[in-house]
Length: 225
Image (cartoon, rainbow, N blue to C red; front, side, top):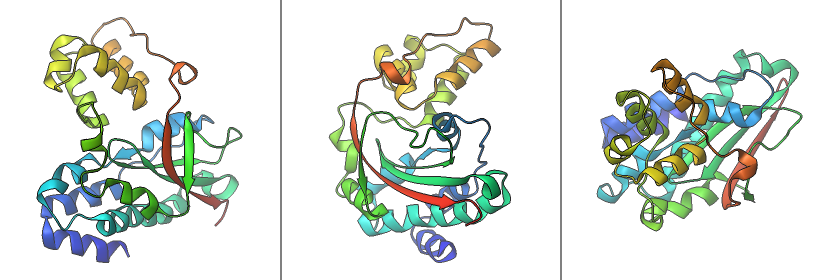
């Protein structure tokens, strides 16, 4: 399936095809037993897909569904070569954020890794269809940013999360902090701050975050699947 979807996307937009391939082959980490932290390492918010959508009418619910299914298929094959395959197994996710988001975690004692109020759905298409006609980029009052954009801006500004960094992302300072928390980037941001000899910033923990409802698809892969 992956090859077919890649060829379909490449026929329309070479840059998006390269992006699909990069996400499908991105490094995946499963250190430790904190599944939420693993998701922070492994998740990918498909912002580029949604940024293109308004000017590319072929990016519809069906294409979005095939796009995320292709990523999950590639990840499912790759995960067989990693340590948790034999002993633990995995959980793969497609969920609702500013854009369709995919993630992978190892099976842990903590089980489901995310806070808030999840609304489980039966198929990735049930999440993908939420974005038809613009998706959360248009429905959100906040300016959409991806994790990579946030980290790149913080790095460019030497670990600062103040006005200049926020302005580079077209955000208010308070919104920048909220997105760092929401996207699970606190540890990575503080690592950048430490590298630049800055004190660690204080962010809210998962327990302190406001409850939010979101649609999510879960695929559980038992050990040795």
